[in-house]
Image (cartoon, rainbow, N blue to C red; front, side, top):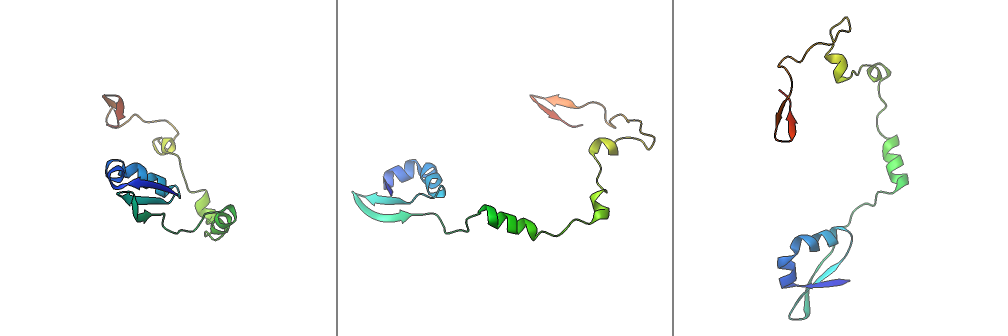
Length: 101
């Protein structure tokens, strides 16, 4: 088990919490004496069999709904299959990110 001083906890609190989140216990000391312990909260380990069981309990997708999805590019086409132009012209570029019009 690792130990940190109160000062180190104050300065590097985020890093200490990251270590605890990674299942490590940390003892906090004041003047060289242990005063507290940080430990991860107990939780359910997600093992492969548990994930598979959860997946099996998901409701089945309706066969009619399965084919009811469309891609965005399909939705932008006219009924005859001709692709339409964007309603507001081309995308604007602000900085390095593209922003849709």
